[in-house]
Image (tube, rainbow, N blue to C red; front, side, top):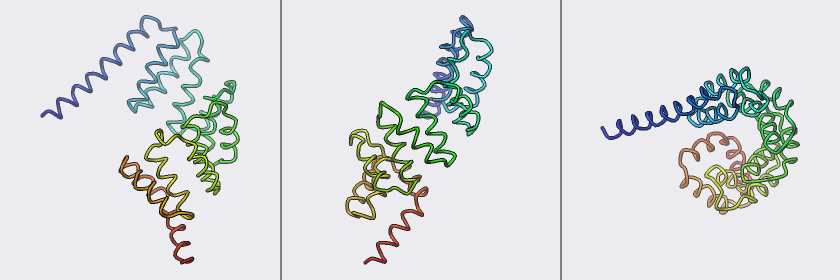
Length: 215
């Protein structure tokens, strides 16, 4: 009963927040910021389709429709509409956000070299950027480069996914060190650990087989 009430309370909270944001839009229908705030909130709630529809309609209403372009490109990316995302991103001047999103799109469509080129151009490199660069290196088969990139992420900011990736990148070189990373990853978030384990099961098997042949 308590759980049902909690779910209901959460639902009411979401409805109130959405209603408040819609009221702001109704008062200032030409203000881009109000649409962006609602779109961001919808994405946070997992309503990517609604966010996309909102921004598509808003572009015909706001004073500065170009202000919505980046967020609309992100929406298309989340929907898997990579061509549409790139079409918009290519019309926006390259700053760190745009470069990151372009790198994400190219990485997602399997164009890792292009993804790397954009990612390495980003000036302000944070943990999120390092994670993407590490993932791209790994997709290119550059395990040492991937490891060194992941290790640049501050230990306090390493997620379960990052610790897992560190585990698989050092596995062939130092199994004991790898197991420490993998154990930490599983402890941090068992669900993420399981997802990554399934995703990289073939790579893990190759490393383990190689070790057995060398023993």
